[in-house]
Picture 1 (spheres, helix red, strand yellow):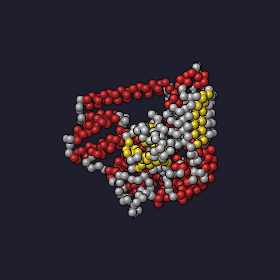
Picture 2 (spheres, helix red, strand yellow):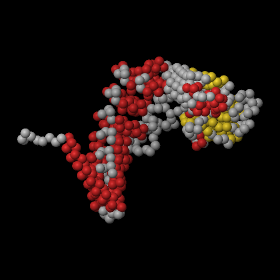
Picture 3 (cartoon, one colour):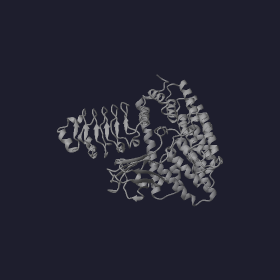
Picture 4 (tube, rainbow, N blue to C red):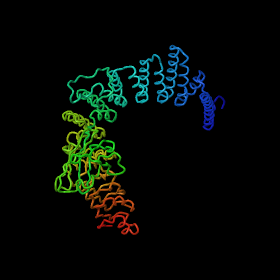
Length: 571
């Protein structure tokens, strides 16, 4: 047994580690308390720097110590000459660099370094740029360093072109460098912006320019080069998401023109419903209603109390202003902040009138990608199809193909789109996208009747486009609720939603024309689930067969009290 090293038991090792931790903790707490006492006493001296340096060297994330250290440095700065101040802060930069080696992602270190450079009489931005290069070579996704690099670039006057070349190098060495792709997306619109429609020339900005406001679009010539760069990346590694996200950004998302898409006027309700191209907050958007040339004092409200920002807003007209069916009226809604308006004429003998956006439904639902030249998008679709032949199960490639098909011709590519969704169906996100597209396919043919029967829907999309729908069939889906947005269907008269799993009817709220609702075989459990129906004053027919609520005691009398206007009730 002699000559052998005694192996310590696990319990012994753990006990020694515990004692060592306690010893370090005791020393740290003692030093911390000493620092806090000095700060409370207002002492800003060299000893404070030494104590905080001792603590921050082991724990760079102690924000209070960095704050105290800045107070000390500012005090010392007042009693020193310019050269001494330069040395003081250069020494501080060396200390911060040592702390970054302990934790390269320390918020406190990077913030303090940025502050120190603002106090330096002669900051060396070249050195700082080199530090960023070294840190990013160790961890290319260190977002603290990326943020600091942007500060350094701004202060040092490094050109946009030079930074773009920097991303070239990083991407060239690693296609998976998502941070570099993202940084590149912020630089391209500055260096190669899409010319304004009324631009008289195509002159590019100076490579050294640092404009404050840029279009997020990139000129087509540069886009073609970027497409090729993205192709090289995802053909090299089709499963890496970085290049695919960048590619999606290049293709862009179309921004629909901000406009009033529909105005609906009802004589009976003396009400105006206005649909916008995006959710707005009407009370702060500068809406003005003009009736027969006279501005009206009206109060705008959303279709449901929970919708503060909504695509559909309502207002009540002054009593008697349009109720006489023998009179003709002209109405204009002005959206003053967007310098746009929409007119609507209520003709003699008409109980209602509306004016819709003239865009076709196909145009409305194909705006997933930017409106580039069809030939360019067609070429990109061909490239993705070539990759799909090599990687038939690649989710990124399939999703991009779907989006390209939607941008080019959603109806012409409908069968292919559905087939690709079947490949992706195991993923809930893609199931949600399929539901959106399924709804928009049906909407391409709707006017007043819309059937979404047996579409496997779990959620409802595009409800803001259904303002004029009078009859909707949502039966045999997988819906759990009718959300508040459902209240935007202000012209709805008949709702069929049988054979779902609906538990909440929150969206059946103040629908002024709703007469008939069929909810057979759902999950309505309590009378309180039906309370929103009391706000629908024209509701006379209600079918609740196959719902748990029918087991409620005295259900008939309770429903008669809750919904006294319903004359045809099926339980």
